[in-house]
Length: 435
Ligand SMILES: [Zn+2]
Image (cartoon, rainbow, N blue to C red; front, top):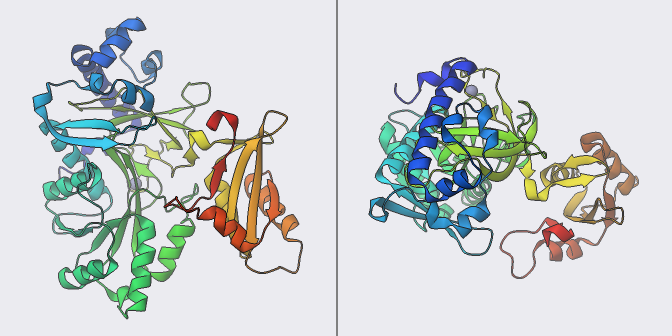
């Protein structure tokens, strides 16, 4: 089976040597073809022949979203007429960033999804109902389609939304797998319950989630994952991917982190001192693409925080895994000397039965550190002191407790759903450096 690459089962030293050879090729390619990296190598006096190992990467400055925005076309390594697919991603400065894929890159994307779907247990003959959009300048839907085609699996392109059409399709065509944003599954379940659809006995055996995590740092299902699983006993697989990476980290059936595919991408986990942290520690995910022809990236800062696990997985693979995302680097909070991210705060609140709604507000304290205030509404008035109980809950889970303010439920709801926002607002950052 070509979609279960032998290299993923080799010891980690073999995987490292394998990646380093690909890295040397990629750097030589950038030196020959990338205006952006030619300039970066020359300005920083980097001799590309000296970059031989993954450790040597630390001599090369990082690339970030701002670079992509400011110098978008300098990243292109091929003549414009070789671009087959034009993709955009959201930029940090307002305008979107364009990504260009050559024919070779689309082939690489297809391969990436084929190995990722295989890792999640699909094979030739599986049928997947795709509940993501395939157009609107996105990479993802197209990549999934190409990957499924490549591995010989069936695909039903329903697109996002419209529960009625999704259920009609499931009943008619009997797919075994759904791919969508996990919170949409809750809508599908709701629709099925409202319309008497026997979803528990449908053909669906597996859900592959994109864009939202379904597990916590111990690989247990998080609130969203549990809500789905309690209602519908199907296998859940989380994935992590982005346009810039052109690679997907998919869970295997053991659900303990997303596996890297070593031929496609190198991951470094970088600490606050801009140096790699030891394996198992949380830091920023920094990626170097391998085998990309159109717009390869070298040491690109994703802004996402996670840890790398290098021990062999229960599935037999040694290819390293990434933990579920801990949060976004921009949202990092320093509370009383402890580093934490909004999802950890949300997790405590989501698991407190008497909390109806909440918003987490971070601001600068007079001492120059972060101050965290949680404003929340109560589902009911508990018989004990709710503020004290909540502080205990926070201390036992994240070691520190924020300031708690109890407000009427409608007041919190008004903050959660302001008129102009399509997404609920649960986190407000008022710190000077973030405004
Ligand atoms: Zn595994």
